Length: 252
Image (cartoon, rainbow, N blue to C red; front, side, top):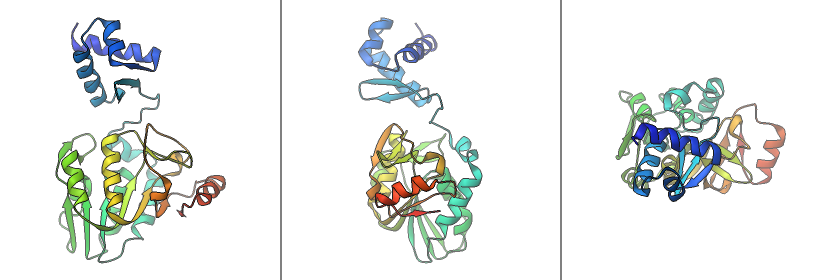
């Protein structure tokens, strides 16, 4: 059985069972566990399932793994509003971390007149945005290039980020709730954001209102990590009260 057929069968199995261990899939298809592990990783790379420790789980109906170009078009007005609000927190002389989130990227337009400024990022679009801007120095993390997300990831990128200190970190999240804190669908991106947060004096999470109260796959940081949440006007009074009641400063 070739990969295209195995791919079809694996996705069919997960569609019925939601999640399975490697050996369970191997037994059902009569294929070695080694081959199944390789297939699951490839399917995860293709963003067709979520790889778990020892197996895989079905991707949610509303697929969370969105390429950067697609993410850029989602909730555009909200993101631009948040980006402008967050950029107002940056002062001349600051050193800041910017992660590869599409909401964080919207800050770039408003940062070009804030000089001098030093930016440490793993985002290729962020680096490109300041390529020829006088007074702004860009430090791009080294590591493995992710073409879909237009970012640099991997252990080397994390090491790079942890070797620097910043006044402020601006990071994104796939979900934010009182129950689970900050959550993400991608471990690679969550690790980068956590590294940035750990090396900054203040941490600002940029999150549009549609993600508030929503839990994603991977818990990666508690709400206590935040200096403030930067969101849009559509956050509800109830959500704001719950977050403030748990010590979160909300800026909208």
